Length: 114
Length: 111
Image (cartoon, rainbow over all chains, first blue to last red; front, top):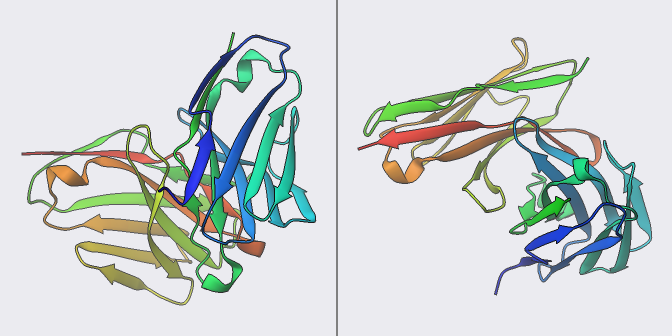
């Protein structure tokens, strides 16, 4: 089984709808992240969480919210989806004790907002 | 402004040759720099990390250099193979282990 899973893998929604993307991990890592990837722009950090009680905004948090339900679960919500939120979304985890900060990514969710 | 730049155009090379990918940055002071590989439809996978006090790091056919004066990292794949074809991302490691990614370079290795 994959260490970092994301659901759904693909989602098509309409402008104005609220949607939630979910991430689960079995790596036992405290740190979790949400990124979006757009062609030519690379990965950009939306939100990150260093433990269950810690939530921090990233570079592009406007229009998004997150919930850290447990150490293993981190959800991303789009309160009212708009077309420019069409992108590939990745969840990632890392361990603070690793010393090198490598991040482990999920398979991604392809979101299309019509 | 802060920027990370990677070769914007795809790099096409012949099997067996050495591929060299560039990562340049401005107005950042990273402690570490990482390289990831990303295959189509999949999440990035960590390859190597190099620290600011290291000039060079090797792992099998991979070699990374880091010049903090030039603000540049070079990523080399020697004896390249078609299976090395992918997008390669550089990432600066900032305070608190936050990563800032470049847009990536597509590498195509032809047999």
